[in-house]
Image (cartoon, rainbow, N blue to C red):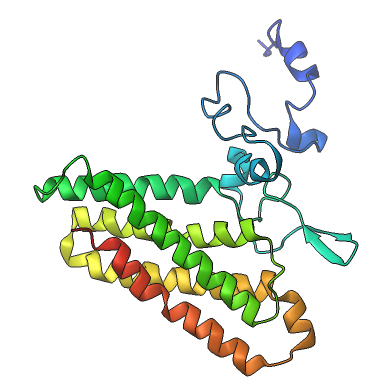
Amino acid sequence: MAWQPGPGFEQYSAQPGMHPGMQGSSPQVPTGPNNPLNDVFYGAAPGLLGAYLGNSKDYVQSNGHWTRIAEQVAGGLKYKPPRHDINAPDLYLPIMALVTYILLSGFLLGMAGKFKPEAMSGLVTKATIGWIIETIMLKASLFALGSGDAPTLDVVAYAGYAFIGVSLSLVVRLLSPYAFHITWAYTSLCMASFLVKTMKRLLFAEVRRYDRDSTRHHYLLLLMAVAQFPLFYWLVHVR
């Protein structure tokens, strides 16, 4: 007996956006009860900040290449925000990694018998200082290389990605103290490589075009990469 579609099949098929791969429509941001984070991050914040927090799960799962979407505006190029470009830096992942780092650090203090309620405020302060240091370092490098007009929130987002590697190092520290230092060195190296590639490919486009002092560029990029190791070491050592 041949298969017969159910009574609701035609109505389901006729709804627009149900088959984005067949109809060519773009993925939609999930809404409704099936998306519990809809009112928290996906478009919750207004204005410029909302563009960095209003991401969909498609954005989080689809970062696959380095190309940014740019548009021509008066005075040069302007990159689109994360809501419209899956390869743009966002604040969703850094904030989630920051919260994870604080919780893991508190758990480590508890395992060592050193946890106190006021310790959480100290961890928040330490994480915030680390994020600020990374942001200032990246922004200062941009100014030194003649690209100080890069969007501040882009730089803040790039700096916040450090907490992904830091959180991973803390997880390994919980599972295997012997592999902790290897993971710390590896995640520091990954962050250093990520920042160098990002700065060279995305934020230094106009600097490369003129190539005023490539030697200075290389030294500053190397300094920024090396600085990730002591910064990560300070963040992952919770006492």
